[in-house]
Image (cartoon, rainbow, N blue to C red; front, side, top):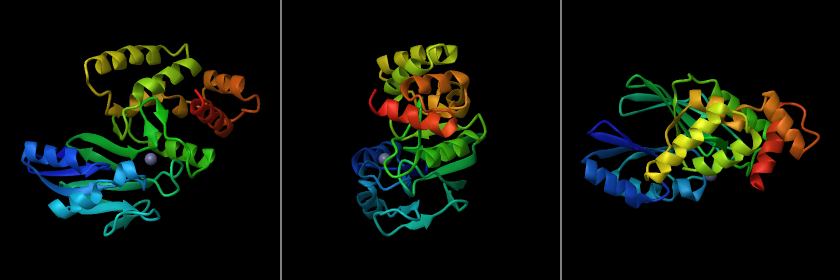
Length: 240
Ligand SMILES: [Zn+2]
């Protein structure tokens, strides 16, 4: 949820109840619901929230969505809370997955990337190919390094265990593991992350690094370029 003390927007409300409680607690009105892809844990709260708040709903062009909504494709823009959000097509986790990028949210770029990019990881490939997902991650990784990365699941610690297994000599990764562990031990989220950090530590953004290519080869001897390295790492993570 993002709010300006008067109005709020939410991204991917899987469940209406925590959103309604937060709206009441903050005393703000829900203006917009942004959806990144069709999975139920991202859309389950849309109908109830639309009905009880009258909020506008935005979502991807080519996915099954709770109607009515405004459908968006790559390059489209929407305005909510007086902020401009640009749509980026990021197929891979699902075929029509989109991300929302705000270049200037009170001085900070903000990315809502759904289940495409996680801290220290990425989404599973349910509907797309490794080359599609890698191209999607490349587009996100090319955004400004100060971008705050708002992922939709707190998978950081489990992702970090895999990241350390495949990139064990990465000092920034080791430091982040300690920081993330301390945050979780205190009941705090590790999110949002930042692109600067993810470029340093996320194995799925580092598939052109020799250390990661070599690690991928230990899992699949055929790994040789960025796409086959990405595919091997993603497959390895699935069974890690
Ligand atoms: Zn999903």
